[in-house]
Image (cartoon, rainbow, N blue to C red; front, side):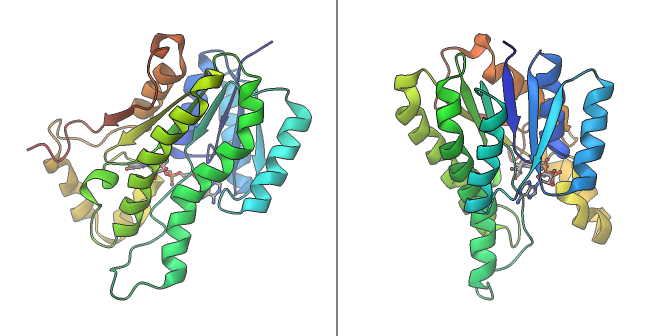
Length: 249
Ligand code: NAD
């Protein structure tokens, strides 16, 4: 039976790069997303690489939608070998003094609740998997608390670090490993707004990175490929920094 990997938010950015990485390593791919047009384009890219893939559209911040989504997935697939909780994002920027509670909740939901909802729903399927593992997404913002207005994003990502370690403890008895990647600045649509509104600021970011460039989505995906593989069979509860030496100068 083929190995099966599910990647939330896998219709673009690092998620799609991860789908390609794992697909080329022989996994059958399940991606999730919220935009039908993005899903269609992502599935076409994967098909062109001879990767067997399917998309389930649901909002990872909506508890009921996640439960329903996993009902559909488990009706079709017997097991999962890999879950990548990739979906996440800034959700906008706001300083604390003026922050609406709804904004706070939205950013926490996108980055933290989503990892909880999807992991909880996936555990029964992962238990049936072969040497199954989970990869969560924290961020350099979870360590340095993020740039201007990204404080809640950083807070949510820091919580993902502890969630990852707690899940590693909780799931070890089933042989399920749980790790996280912590990217620095990676050139994806995540930064679309600043690219459009202040390209000079965007271009200056590389000056704070030892390697003097931003990262590529594939450079995060390749680490995920390693973490879910047998080569990482003794790694659990670990957070891997992928940032080219950012905040290091
Ligand atoms: P991206 O914006 O390019 O892609 C995010 C993907 O998630 C998109 O395909 C989008 O459709 C999907 N998505 C968004 N909201 C969703 C929802 N509610 N339900 C389901 N899918 C949803 O971002 P990216 O750069 O690929 O980021 C991937 C992960 O990496 C995120 O968790 C992000 O916080 C983290 N990260 C990114 C960077 C960076 O610099 N790009 C740095 C650190 C961490």
